[in-house]
Image (cartoon, rainbow, N blue to C red; front, side):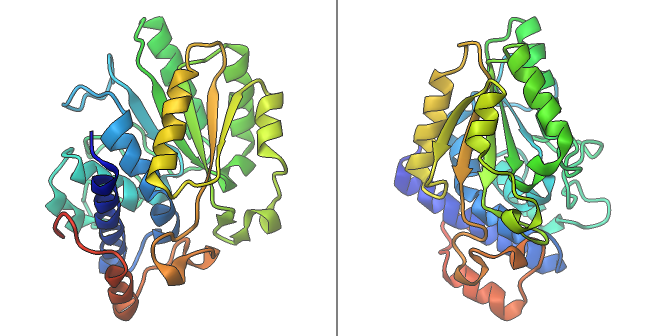
Length: 281
């Protein structure tokens, strides 16, 4: 397994990839991608138990679903850096006929991507269905999913959350990216969601909270803790507090970088704050 120093180096390179992808086409979502860099880096390097070659059915391996698909730049970077497809393919981000569309899709056959996502609120239902399928198949591997906090404003989530607890779906670890920002402003200003811990607990879920979602050690620890709680009759959710735009100082703590690309000067500033560690594409 990578040491923390290697993980930090990986995180730095992924941040560079995010900035460069979005800048090159002047389109994309850097803020949330940067905020989830540590989560993706830990999940794919240390947590997921996979077979080494990508198969859509995911039988006898852990599977991951990204619900808030607009943060595809971090997803694509980590998949490429973990060997799912050539790193050089990041150059095709958001190009016509590219496998790396702005929101992940499946018809291009991109390894690592099992669902089209970006229509917010749907990933929870998909993850629960996959978890039930693993139970029916007597597959003891786990299902992981990531969701934005703003997308919990979609009602479909809560129907699925209620269902998962009722059916004792205890092989699922869902993570909520709590950065407190969405495209139109803070989540508290757009539509306050109140106490999410209390809500999930009222719906019958086991809740873990982590205040340091941009610290690789903290992310690793909470994911390992979540794994230890599987198989006990309750679905698990991690409320992971992150910073929008983390690692690029002028992008942090604001919704304004939800879906805006840096210009040439801003790109260079952001890259200077994140050393190249694995080689740019």
